[in-house]
Amino acid sequence: MAEKTILLDKTPEELAQYLKQEGQPAFRAKQLYSWLHKGVPFSEMSNLPKAFREKLGEECWDLPMEIHEVFPSQKDDTVKFLFRCKDDHIIEGVLMHYHYGYSLCISTQIGCKMGCAFCASTLNGCVRNLSSGEMLAEVLLANRYLGDKGHVGHIVLMGSGEPMDNYEHTVRFLRAVNHPEGLNISLRNISVSTCGLAPQIRKLAEENLGITLSLSLHAPNDAIRRQIMPVANAYTLEETMDAVRDYVKKTGRRVVFEYALIDQLNSRREHALELARLLRELQCHVNLIPLNHVDERSLQPASPKAVQEFLHTLEEKHISATVRREMGSDIGGACGQLRRRYLQSGS
Ligand code: SAH
Image (cartoon, helix red, strand yellow):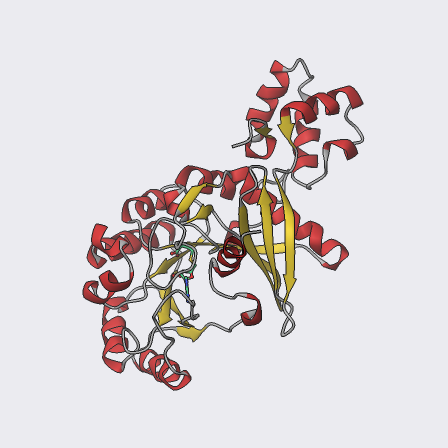
């Protein structure tokens, strides 16, 4: 990692402490925090002395990332980004336009070590965690791209990486992005998706954050789940569901289950019935996702007919469910596909 300090990693208190060490008056911390969280470079922080800005520039990063490439969809308003970190690693993010505004899907790690059998993000393993300031930079760069068109109002932590495997920085990011002196994005507008690290789900419930928890379930029982998600060997479905129930009880928030429909494996009527039994009496919503085919993977998506039948079976059993709309399918829709393509092109 580059040796310069990432100022966006710091809380206002930590930033004040840092400036104190630099012999700067306390009020500058507030000014600096506000500029940083608007994505303004040191050179344009007009109310800070030039010499101070130059010194900061030698020791610190203002924005620890840049846009490497932009891929606008031809089919809809979706835009995929490749971002370049200061150590030259590439990550991806997706900007989606909904009727309620812009939503950004961000990465939390460079790669992923969870090993899910359908996912492109994990194919090259995990290089390192992203810091909270790097996650913030993804949002700031998307806002810079949007310019006058708008700004990011919703965030989903569903890009590459497992947020609960990068717990400290994820929670730090959530607090920072919600800070009134910063981007001030409501925690209600943020979803954190996890493959199901049960102890961290329990810990997250204690943080008192109003975010939505998404659990990547993808199977109605352990036997199927273990075929596609190695994490199911570490935590049984019972342990994971216990942690989720605990989360719902503590936070009062409904939980969202992600369920990618894979041909034969998890998409038959018996699977839908088993899923409905598993989720009975839980305050939840199921997001059905037709599997995004990944070239390196042998798994095939369930047919559109099977998807509709699965949905109807859940509805029959009074489980709230929707089929996720496909967006930006022409630009490497699935998690980690774009970065994977970049790595393979050898550029
Ligand atoms: N690690 C976290 C967040 C990143 S993945 C998690 O597992 O939840 C975001 C979502 O996309 C997860 O639900 C994941 O299982 C799903 N996903 C990954 N690859 C996919 C694919 N090829 N088709 C459909 N969904 C996929």
